[in-house]
Image (cartoon, rainbow, N blue to C red):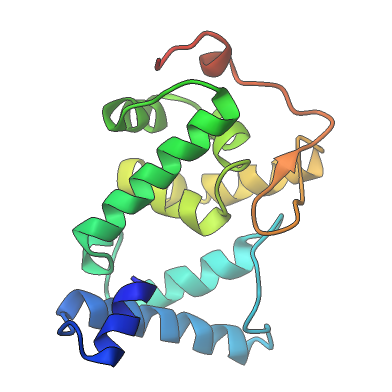
Length: 182
């Protein structure tokens, strides 16, 4: 989506309503960060609540709900799914299809899913994935609270960037050990 904005500024593509909604949402989230005194380069690491609250409030401001197609093009959504699959494959060491990804997110515990995806994706990407397949885990606060708890329990620890690394108490979840989705 950022590449699209660059192309729009260069005049190589026309701006769409999706581009406008994406940009408005990003700017509103940034405004909220600045109002809270948070730096522009803020990275939600072990405590994503600040990002989650600003992001959710910006969605509400523009009445965007949880439909990612209002903010992202089909190409951007497809790229996100490829990134999710790659994250799984790197951590779990096995291949995954889009259908298996969807089934996994819908079926497995949030905790077990975070044991894999938090090591390959930043929290905003995890949030996007859950928004696509299992929004109720976002809406009821389960995703954020379990994510934060995994850091408190030293299951995950902060990595160099926004992506967590395995903590001393990390263990592969059962669905990975059993190769349930391969």
